[in-house]
Length: 318
Image (cartoon, rainbow, N blue to C red; front, side, top):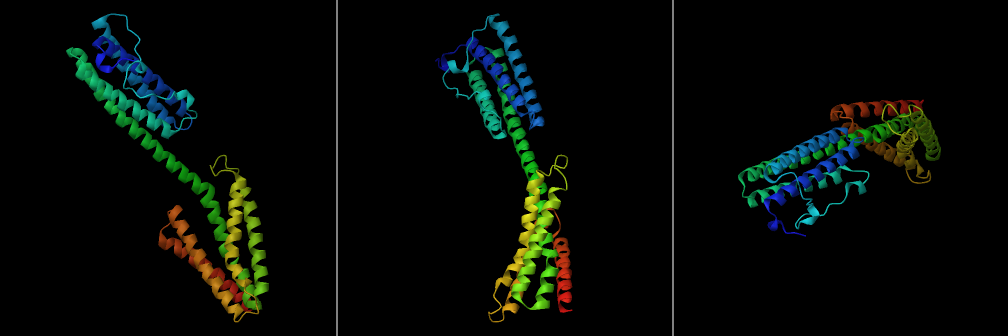
């Protein structure tokens, strides 16, 4: 390997031509690897490839003027100081993080090469071209950082949207149904019987039945191919489990045996406390993921839950 200081101006230009050709081909590989998942970023890398080709042509024109048609083959691995690059074709599928790291490294290394080469050159025209290319590579470095950062932001937004569609929405629908719709039968049974065991059985039946019903309803609502809501069986499972969980939350306090002192009053008090916690959680999820204002979320959920609860209590007192 040769040291960089030992290169003359002809060899520096030959190396620069080789570097630009390699960088252009790597950007082309980036564009090909990202075109399916990140088409906008793939197009930007194609534009960078075209600019690297333009740099190579400018270098070729100057080289021909100064040194003729023969260009010695000098590659980055022939000169000390360059970082070893992992071949792009070995890194499949391409991820944005891998592209970001390699693109930033490429542009930083090439920029430093041109800056150092410009200081070493004595010919005015060669020095000027190398300095101009160093500045353009500096712009490429910033562009690559901004481009990948934008893609990462887009990817994060896409993941959040998919999470809301595929997990939060079916889960929230199930939790609301399980927490609210089971209130009436549970508390109707509680105040009608004043018996914890019978109330528990009603609560278990209502919760599990609602979970099965909501799970199948969600799974059969659509296949997710057009709406982007994901696998129907997964949505159904999430919805069914959250429905059952919402109902079981305020049914399980009635596990307190009837033989315990003030068993009914204690179980009912705990169940009402659980209901309040469930309604607050539902309001928080609506505020956090559905962009519902806190006041609206709390009003809608609490008022609805309160009405169902009162309906159950009134029916149970009949």
